[in-house]
Amino acid sequence: MKPQMTIDRFRIWLAVILLGVITMGTIWVMEVIRRHADDEQSRTSARSAPDYYVEKFNFIRLSNNGKANYHITGDSLVHLPRTDNIEIKHPQINSFDQGRPPLHLRAELAVVSQKSSLTTPKREHDEVHLHDNVSMERPEGLSSQFVRVESDYLLLLPDEDIVKTDKPVSITTGKLHSTATGMIANNSTQGLELLSKVYIQLKNREPAPKTGNK
Image 1 (cartoon, rainbow, N blue to C red):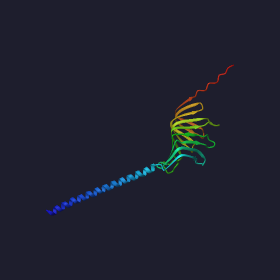
Image 2: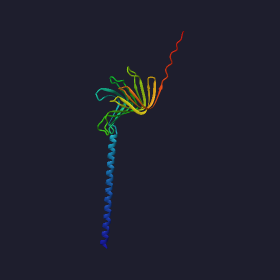
Image 3: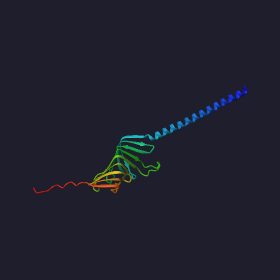
Image 4: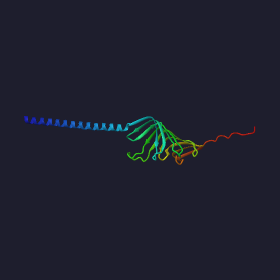
């Protein structure tokens, strides 16, 4: 009788020990998973956070041939390492290349995607995405007339000197006011292409002064 009770107790204690080992192993695995998730979240947060921040900045953007062509100012600039993008609050962009009409652009926000071979997909050129209350003006010159473009979004390609959008635009030039959806403006050739839903209105001419005999 006693040997049988001893064997039963041994089996019970063996089951308890095995259950304890399994429980401790499960707790250890869950702790490892939790720590890995916390580490991954910390690394993701670190990559998402800006790695540098500049207020009231002022710099000149150089084209690929080393010729200064865009003067950019803004209230603040932050660099986001996860996307390698630069965000600019209240940007003002002015071009001043010799031989090309100047451009003046403003917006609430600009997101600059820099040329890079490290991103996927690879970026072949710089892109400046302008968002919210965007305006572009080209003043009247010897070989160009005044043009003002307004939209909620414009894309500036500095190396190509092209501004385009697939959003609605409002355009004022000379005595014409136009609206459209989608636009491509080439500042080098002074070409302006409206893509769809084009509506053109001729502004009223000012009345000619009256003449008569006194």
